[in-house]
Image (cartoon, rainbow over all chains, first blue to last red; front, side, top):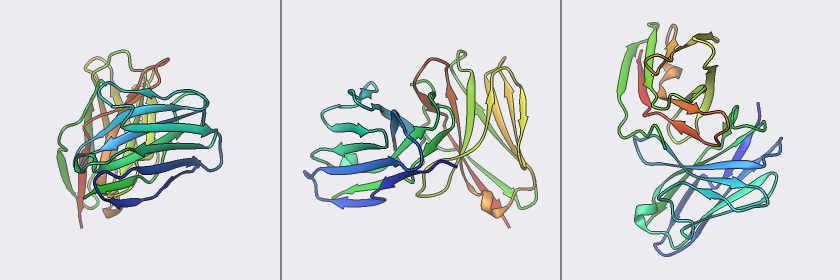
Length: 116
Length: 112
């Protein structure tokens, strides 16, 4: 099946630093990618929809200045957690649809962010 | 979003038994549903999907049942194996919308 690569898989950083997470579609093009956040023992919560060539669409309550999204090409979307704080520690997951809709969604392996 | 999970319910089954995982969705306009399996520290993995014009779909060892009247979805796993231990999420999509919303999730533990 289609492959979505997410990097890095684990990040430990000091409070106040910025962390960039990459999401790549390896064998297909994705004009749209989704970013999710997952706290321990909880479900995935959609943060934002990344759109190639245009601004990302953020879900209610998600700070766009805090979570910067850039979808620079048809195979790469990045999420930057700016000035990270301990409460930003979470599991971040990206996904990309292989078709024009968000069916047949393939997920990256996730990034565990730990902010000290 | 519509369905947002808070804490994971758990289900423990003996190896070889059948498992039934349930999910309630909230948006009656949702017309496409997916079950995902998520192992610890990994992203969700697609298991099976079903459209709202169907009430049952079978895959290899898995069956999904959809009851639109009560907005209920279930995943049946036949002859559950230790490798099936994971968290299972249902997800719903509404045609024309751009978002996939996940249900609460259920942690399945298979006892050897």
